Length: 243
Image (cartoon, rainbow, N blue to C red):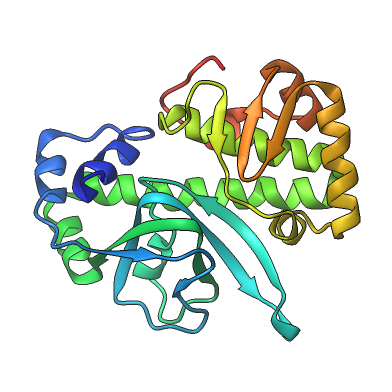
């Protein structure tokens, strides 16, 4: 298992320069970890947050709980991400976080992070930038779900997740674990299950990718980018990898 402190350092260094003093400050955090089962909530809508969550292993999702129990998935987060850093500055969570497949998460007390900001303002800026990157992903998701055809929005989501996994070195060659069910894809992309199946069949027929049993295989990256109208600039990552 990855060490939580080093996982957080790696993630922040993908978009920010961390002086040695900032890294030393991160290593002082008192972090507790928890294994979570698929679909298990570890932050609930309406909670009063006292800890920031770090994804150590696996994938987690941010979602809104809708009347009748349906979900609207808002974003997905991989090893190293801080999916609820906004909780440092709000009193009540307006969304929930759950595991997508088995995952390990870590909890960092808010009071320790805020004290670290006082000692190391540059670390505060790096974590603030993490929240800005989340906002950029939200903006792209709004455009994706409201303005793009169904197969395009699915291809775009696959491109984003594959690219982020590649930058974080979480993929295995042209393969990436994305443990989403077809129902969850529909709840992410605002599609009925029949539309999910049709869109997935169209993307498979293109020869650019395949997605089965929670694994994405990218066969023609440039073609998948074209099909998804995907440009990675909105991710604002310092590291860039040709894929």
